[in-house]
Image 1 (cartoon, rainbow, N blue to C red):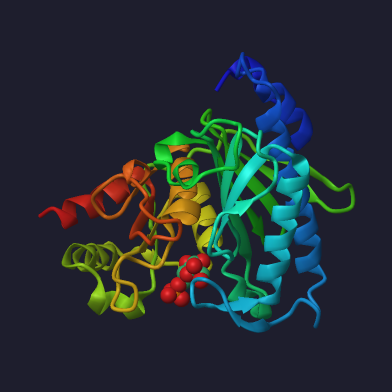
Image 2 (cartoon, rainbow, N blue to C red):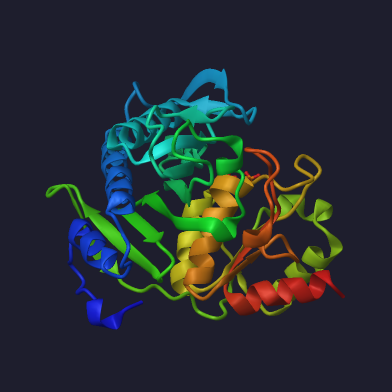
Length: 329
Ligand code: P6P
């Protein structure tokens, strides 16, 4: 990160994006515009969530491609982000947790691909638990003469040009990276602006919080079971909200580890590689943390399918390393 461009807390997101674009000498402004499009959708979804009523509460009565009960807000968030990215003109194709196939935006000459979970943890909305949007941005590998291709979408996490999340909690926050550190912005609804509130976030090397669904422990790999026993012996605290973005955000700021290994119901884990594991892994590493599938680095995994699942161990570097040690004993 270029300290000379270190911007003060309170800088608006728009000014921050503009100034940071100067970090990239060949930047054309397209990625900057894409980030603004994401921020616009985030403001709209934040508003919809804050005025949660019978039009937005509860399930739709349909299952999404994941076989999960689709919440009304899932569909609203999905539509809002797709519309913002399509209208913004910088994205040629979108992969969404809510859509089985690639969404072609019609912007055939656009340079970027977005993979997203429009509203992760949405089943928590009815009980007022924080939820989040997770996004990942890639440069297309196909020529800019045709619509985005499957190969454009199935890229290794190391190829991400940007990634981030929006946390709809006590306040709405946008946290993202473009590969030069991680910065957090807090939304002020009365002004309709995101303001820099958490510059240059670094995750503590270790922590004393672990996040996992212990009901599944008997199905965890033995190494993970042994690591969990270690956490208890060390008198760590169990902190599991059941909302990935909220658990990740707490661990990012205070140190800690989140793990969702394979279980009987989801032998490959529950979380999706393209739009949950990869973007959070990019953020974790940019903040000095780590992300593996228990052993292998998440960002180096080669996706074979749009919605493939992957075990995830993510958070403070020393804690992720400890899991790897237990997994390879
Ligand atoms: P479980 C929400 O459905 C989610 O994808 C994550 O946000 C959360 O961490 C996890 O699943 C919770 O899963 O099986 O513990 O209820």
